[in-house]
Each structure stands twice: as structure tokens, then as C-alpha cells.
Image (cartoon, rainbow, N blue to C red; front, side, top):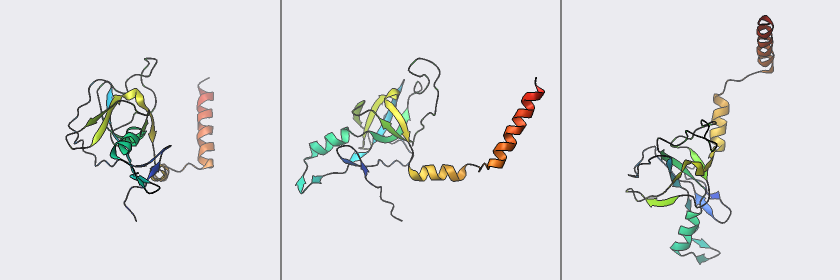
Length: 163
């Protein structure tokens, strides 16, 4: 099977998904509510036989909206926008995430890779690949319709006894 990452099509360019080995080698430590994301990189170096200058490729990369969450500060993912306790899934390092276009600041890590440092609120979603979804589905216990009915009957009996 081919281990090369497949290209991801964006609105204006194609991107190579960021690869992360599970170790933070950036040398960048998040504080407060910031997160560090290793962004997907623009794969296009030529279009229709025209070689794109490095600054154009860099601009496309800066517009990337997907990447891998590398780290986050202690204050990230504690509160919702309305200042209530965080609800919903919390991203963890290694998750592929969607972010706002051009969010945060680009920072070059000591490992030579370009990261984005931004507020955790710039993350809009956790991205799951087809392989991830299939793995989750196969790991989940199968619930047959008969089991659903049996569980509902037990819940009903318990509710009647409590009256």
C-alpha cells in the first residue's frame, strides 16, 4: 500500500497533509489560551507549465485551513465563547484540525518547520479521515435492534417502579 500522503484539495490550491510523529520538536511552548498547529503545506510549484515563485507557494501555504494540533496552553479549551464550561470534544495533540484562514502568527520552530500560534477559538473542527471513521465504527460494540428494545424495556420498568 502507498504510504505517501494524498493531496488535499483546497479552494485555490492543493496541500500535502502535515505529518507529525507525536513528538513536539518545535521548541515553542504555548501559554494561556494559545494553540500550536503544524499546517498543511501547499504542494503546487507549477501550474499549467508555469513555475510558481516561492513567495506565491508561501502565500498559498499561509492560507491553509488544516493542520495537526501539536500543543496547547493550560487555559485552552476550558471555556466556551459565552464563558460557560467547555462542552463538546476537546482536541488533543495529534488531531487534524480545521482553523480559520490566516489565523494566528506563523512561527518557525527550531526544527525548521513553520507553525501557526493562535487562540484556541480559531479551531473550528476536528477532522477525521475515512480510515479514522472506519476504525471507530469497527471498535464500537454492535447494538442490534433487539438489544435496543430490551434496553428500552428495562428503562421503562425502572421508571414505573420509581413512581
